[in-house]
Length: 297
Length: 297
Image (cartoon, rainbow over all chains, first blue to last red; front, side):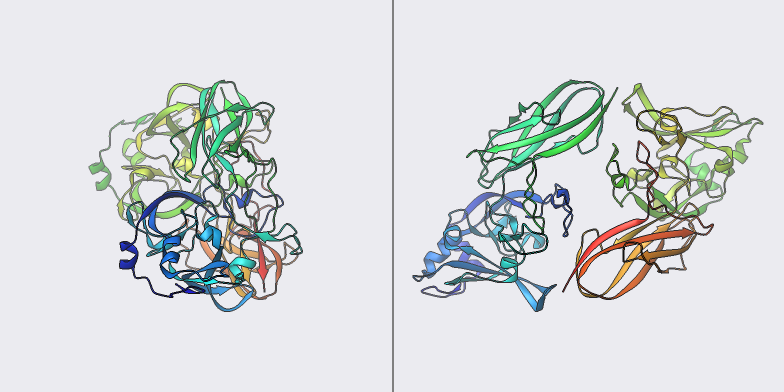
């Protein structure tokens, strides 16, 4: 921990274990989740619904570490660096994965330096030995393989902050660009799956819904392409930032073709748009979810 | 083994082990491979490029068993039944997976009753203990968990023969329907992947090509959406029905957007169409393969 702090210092794993531990039920969603669904299509990994996970992360609040070192007046951001390095198209030489957080988010009580995932050491691919966990933001903020933290006075302008993980609304210019931060309220239909063929009779439509705070007020589901909507039942025991499971009985379905839609409404009234906000790099897709099925006799 | 044979009898695993063994390098492709690529979209599992595999299958020729039992005059088909049973939308009661082969294909020297896969007992999901292997046909013909074989005089009309695994060219009628049989000549671009973002410079385009006989004469690749084509290098050591690996160096690529196409030509001149033959159940997609990439500086 260095930069604009009173007492720069190294923290060993033992140091971290000796500080007060907190466990945060966190959801990690790749900013590119559902990228494949954008129209017109965009470049980048063609994620469908699967770039999302959740678990219990245990560690020390970043705020606790900053209290130990002290923050000098004029500090603006906390810059975190991972151990992953490599070549990056469009950037010279070798670059590390470095991201910054505004001071307010860095000091949030759920922003932690995690050393455990589901009560085990963090698996290597998920960031062993230490991972910054920033609940409520897309997962690029939760820097893996954490090696260094620096407090800065200036806004950080590394390529993973100012080139990637930026919403570019225009195909051919950078006009109107702004950074990717909070997770958008969203839902996914998990059952039935896209283009499924079902027998006639009664079915259960199931899925998940999530938001940047974890709070979901309700999930509305349509089985007629949006002409009419019903409120799904949802699990009242959702924890922390985790997603909420929801389901709706779909009784006595007759043969035909159906378009099922789901739409989450979060605790502050935020919801999903009919059409996703198109952006060149394909981040933050959260349009009303859609599954088409055919019911046979 | 029963039905229209001279000497109906049971074959134990020991009986099979004692008959002459053959090993066939076979490719198994689900008839629904690439189903997701059809336009207009069709119902059914939304396979992309992954519903294909290959391996070495060892067992006894079906022909050898038929020589043991003898075939009566007038025999037309060999009907094979798997142990998998269940409910099927559109069909009453419980049905088994049963398929038939015309006598000529049943007697082909590469059509075998396999008891080993890659020199090991067949994994359960792949058909343990016995699987019919019908190289050159889509994989529905290679009946898993084989329990019974019957020689028949009449064409078999079970639902997996006359409802599923049928090409229906019309959306709303069964007119012009015909059965799914031989694998169509096809190729897949495996590297780069769809909507990849690449650095400028030299790249290698890689993929596989296959046909119902395994024979591939050449693979043509375009990096400009089909305006010009180059012949890829392909592996001359392809075995049996296995796919052929191919690659093409793509030198000094400048920033821009590119459409890469691949087209296999088999040993008898058969090739891939520009647009796949649309059919309601989405079988046999083999249009020219297509990957769009963006090259950055």
